[in-house]
Amino acid sequence: MSQRITGVLSPVVTPFKADLSPDAERFVRQCKWLIANNVGLAVFGTNSEANSLSADERMALLDKLVDAGVDPARMMPGTGCCALTDSVRLTAHAVKLGCAGALMLPPFYYKGVSDDGVFRNYAEIVERVGDARLQIYLYHIPQVSQVPISLKLIERLLKAYPKNIAGTKDSSGDWNNTKATLDNFAGDGFDVFPGSETFLLAGMQNGGKGCISATANVNPAAIHNLYANWQSADAETLQSGLDKVRGVFQKYPMIAAMKRAIAYWSAHEDWATVRPPLVRLDAAQSKTLLAELEECDFSMPGLKG
Amino acid sequence: MSQRITGVLSPVVTPFKADLSPDAERFVRQCKWLIANNVGLAVFGTNSEANSLSADERMALLDKLVDAGVDPARMMPGTGCCALTDSVRLTAHAVKLGCAGALMLPPFYYKGVSDDGVFRNYAEIVERVGDARLQIYLYHIPQVSQVPISLKLIERLLKAYPKNIAGTKDSSGDWNNTKATLDNFAGDGFDVFPGSETFLLAGMQNGGKGCISATANVNPAAIHNLYANWQSADAETLQSGLDKVRGVFQKYPMIAAMKRAIAYWSAHEDWATVRPPLVRLDAAQSKTLLAELEECDFSMPGLKG
Image 1 (cartoon, each protein chain N blue to C red):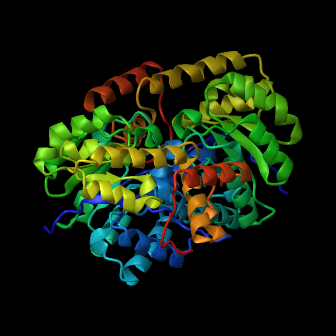
Image 2: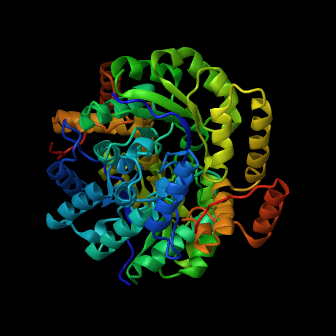
């Protein structure tokens, strides 16, 4: 097994054209900008509107990225779908391309399902993909998926598939859960990524491997800077700076707000486009968002539209 | 526009082989049995594990059904997905085949989305499918989808697309909501189907058009009998009989329990198979379920495995 992926990753926002089709060229440019800012590519996450894309659309975008010379060792695409057959297809495709890992939602349509059922989903994916290179990162985001990844489930999966269950993204926003995950499993070669840079410093102090955060789409360099310097004397100050920027975006619907900021700093209005059921920020929201960001001396240097 | 579909419809349970692939032949036989029992085919609903199937798997099954000579005028396939592109593809396919309607979930990954966003989803589907034959049935099942179809949204959609917004399935289990939907829209050519036969009689008494119910998979003739005789003197008695059978199934995870019953009465064990994240009934559950059904003098005459 090659070295595991670590550091700061971005659930890359997906650019759409005015007709709502994905814009592969802008996607490649955005990913290259993130890589240049030392941020890895957790493409097809919640913030990527991945579930608003068909399986074919996701695979075509991933192919474009690899074809454009972006290193798959820096990629952890989201491949967990409601349908087992979709999850297997997307995961096998990602592994075949050489992606570092696959970030995997549980099937999220049915609610109140048992750990047995969720275990069986991941077990079938591991068995069907059947590739020693497969590195699964379990995606815990119960406030959206409504299907939690329990500590008991992690334990059971790690025991059954120690070579394929590589880690987790904990987007619960519940530090107690992240801490318990770190305490229980970080010593077993299970890599824990908090789902927000809010917990980047605390995570690193407790054996975490970085973070996978929405705001890494817009503030990549500063977040990576804390990751690289978490043991330095000014780590707390760096963390406060990150929290301030995130606090502004969090006042708004996050995905639409990040796309608005990217549209502004890249001077490419199509960036503001979201697929339904999301809606873009209205004019008043856009104005206050940009004003608040300018107040923080926020900008997105080097961004191209 | 041809006559709208009415009566009792079943969200047909999907048969899987031991390897979890759909069994098209058994699916066709089951659908023909339902039709013979006067029940229409709301294939690819919640009880069909439709979201556990890929878009291609759904389309292949629907093609098989039509190829086998089952009348598409008796079909209302589920076509609402998280991804707009999947919803458009499945819906266009169903319309092209001549299906009576499409039962459409809202995109269900993101929670707390606005009515504007959900409106935009349905509007895009209507515009992109662009076929006068399209009859959309809005699927309200908030306890699962977590994305409700509000009365205001129905009003707005009906106003924008009066020829394409045909009705709703209300699976909320909240009679007050079903009644309000009937009171507000049943006079406008908007067809309301309660999502359970529990409300079949009350629905018919208030302008409903039938029901689309899980248990129509296992108890079709009796449910149709109440539909056909809702104005008769013994309608209340018929309703009580239906409630008794449903009450037994409701004690168990519904989909696994129905598949267990079908496996038993068809003598085809593969019928008990479910895709993850669901799990089949265990031996003890299976035993008590079948005992309780026999106590009700329940059986499934004419069923083939």
